[in-house]
Length: 112
Length: 111
Image 1 (cartoon, one colour):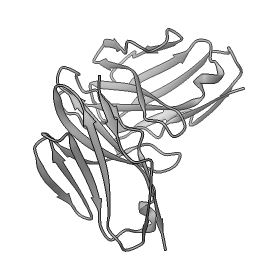
Image 2 (cartoon, each protein chain N blue to C red):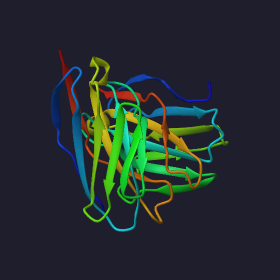
Image 3 (cartoon, each protein chain N blue to C red):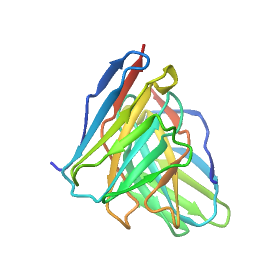
Image 4 (spheres, each protein chain N blue to C red):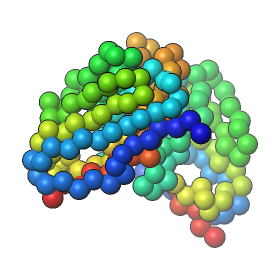
């Protein structure tokens, strides 16, 4: 089945230790998004790629970076995780012009 | 910016009907979405409204009034598995495919 796959599902890191979360998709969608969702809060868009074009949200901290080496893969890098970065990180995809997002299962990050 | 409001929690009985409301304030409205999210899982798409009126899809229906900045999700014949968070999300023109989500309504279905 075509889908969006995130790895790892659970990640524990230490304060300040870099983390990379990955997302892959078999839907051949040209838009990929990263959302951050903290407990009992709305998913918050960090950035998205429209093909190779990177679009950063104005309030996304520099601590968060992303890479999209090809259509299928997208990575979220957190350079120096703080306690406040503990959250569920959701990857989503869509086709350009279609607003329906397909989400992955998420990666839950714990920062010790 | 955009502002999306929905109730934090609701409780309903198995077999009953429940209506979850969402109000929004935005410029350049380009559609309203409802997603279902079970605890610890990804949001899954339920419905999409861009024109006024009611969209029905099985047990779930969604209504939109653009002039009032108002939508609701109607769930009929509630089942225990419907216990989840229901997220209202708004798309705006010029925003590409970006959605802004509300904080979600946690629905608890009881026997």
